[in-house]
Length: 169
Image (cartoon, rainbow, N blue to C red; front, side, top):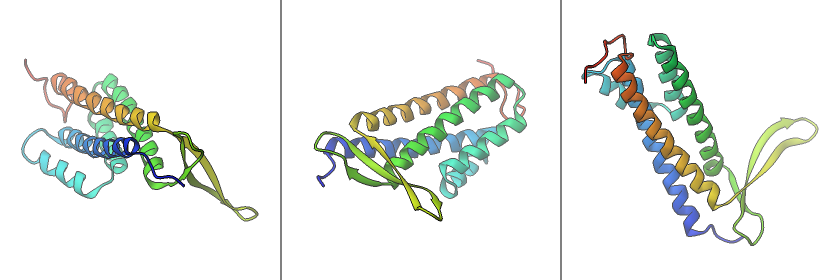
């Protein structure tokens, strides 16, 4: 088995950084939903320190659904959080699976456990990937971060955080 190329490791590092940044922005969004002043950032820090990205995403989405008055914002947040979950699942596949070398090209694979059957034992799935897949995920994570920043700005201006009135420009 040959070693993983430096460029793939760099891309994996960028994915890890972007996941951490994304978790921070989702935590900040959840805190802003509760309230925009002082203590909200304590909540943001607590979420970031004690919950996974998946848990923070679920908390954020549930709070916003209960407090939001604008259905378009709810739909938009649902779409963003779906992208977050998909990207996180892809990242987890890359990071937490067993890597294999498929051939002497630039392609690798991860072996993931599937369901268990009594007759066959554990079933495995082989998923191939290459540098472009890593770079694509890193870019998708960055795009989601920008979308969350834009969403925070739009919702803040629209006054849909914790029943607040719209902010004047």
